[in-house]
Every structure is written in C-alpha cells, then in structure tokens.
Length: 153
Image (cartoon, rainbow, N blue to C red):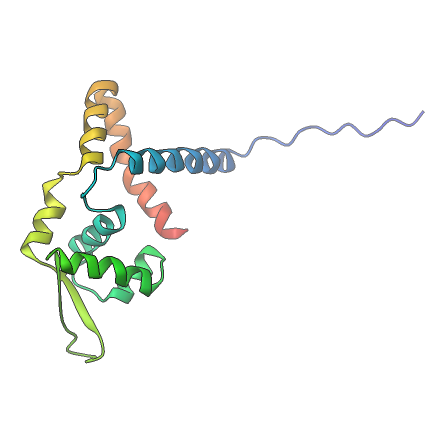
C-alpha cells in the first residue's frame, strides 16, 4: 500500500504575515481617510509634497517625484496646484538654468505646520477617545518605520 508522503504545512513566516497585515491595514486606512477628507482641503499628494519640502528643503519637481515614486508629470500637476494656492514658489536653479527649485512660501510653511486637516483632526479625536497613551506611543514609534518601509518599496 503506497501512502502519500505527509505534507506538513510550512511554518508561518512572520515577515510575510506582517507584510500582509500592513498592506491590508494601510489600504483600509487610506480609503477611510480619503472618504473623511473635507471638500476644499489640500489633497494627500499636496500635503505630502509640502511635507517633503518642509523636511528635506528646496528641491526640483523631479526630485519630489523621485521621492514619491511617481512621474514628474504627476508631481508637476500637484506642484502647479500648490503654486496657484500660493503655497510653493519657484526660483531659478543656479547650476542648471533649465531647472527650477521649489520652496515653501510662508503660507505653505503655515499650511504644513498648522496641522489643520479634517483627516488629522478625526484621527486625533479617535486617538484621544479610543486609544490608551501606551497605544498612541506605539503608533508614534511605528510611524517612522512605516514611512521608511514606504520609501523602500
């Protein structure tokens, strides 16, 4: 009698499990955050571009696009909308006259640092109402790790 070899299930891979849980959780967070965004507020791409300029300093549209792993054309549309709102300004690149350097205007800096955003307000309220101080601290420690993970994808 030939018995089929017993196949034992592979041991769970904690990294794969974490990757799947992060993918699902971040996707759900992103969808719900988009639903909560109020009309007329800055979009996530706009806020991200402003935040990058604040943290990394002046750079080109291409540099911003590389950091966000999107096309320069897509970032150009975002930057154009930020210029129309008076939140970023262009200046000539001293090293390459074909390029321009983007920097935050005082209004752009204020927009980044105001923290006024319907989604941020909602998340802040949820953190205050439904999470312990210890849980908020864990999320605070995890945030830069998730940012680094996003940059490495």
